[in-house]
Image (tube, rainbow, N blue to C red; front, side, top):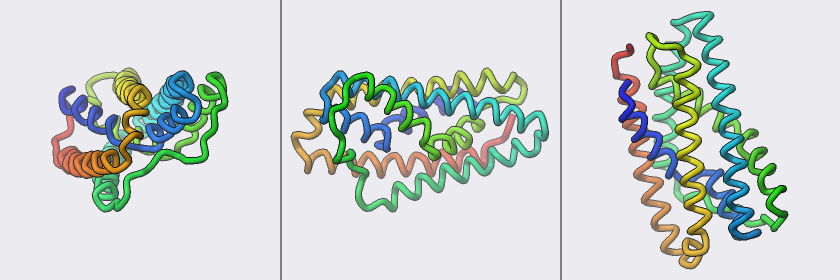
Length: 204
């Protein structure tokens, strides 16, 4: 697979509102910019734990059966279509958590790690997404780690941007809801198209 489709998909997925983004915004509202940035670092580290787990798990799968790995890639493409359809059918975009209190930078950092590391959906997503852009002619683990690290870096950059602009986003609830709704729909269409493309594309 080309690196350009991967990068475009990773960018779209990074800007899609999700639990991680909602958490760092809520943390910023509760404890200020420092807590928000600390939580971003925490969720980034938690995301890297998922990347390493996916790399090790998928490499073991390849060692056992190349056919099984191909099946995982097709299931992963179907999973992306499913996620896209869920976004398109979603009536109300996710909102930041309400009951979040200021707890300090250190607590925000470690809680950010826990929030992301314990997110089963993140683990499933990496298992579904990363294999789509690997090549059987190259070592698998380095590919997965590099691609996963790019995803985590993009997600963290978007979270940081959300933290920096949180006070402006929260000033206009109506405008924020409208932007979030359109962004969610655009992301849903993109994910459905990506899943279909990956399912039909020729494997290396």
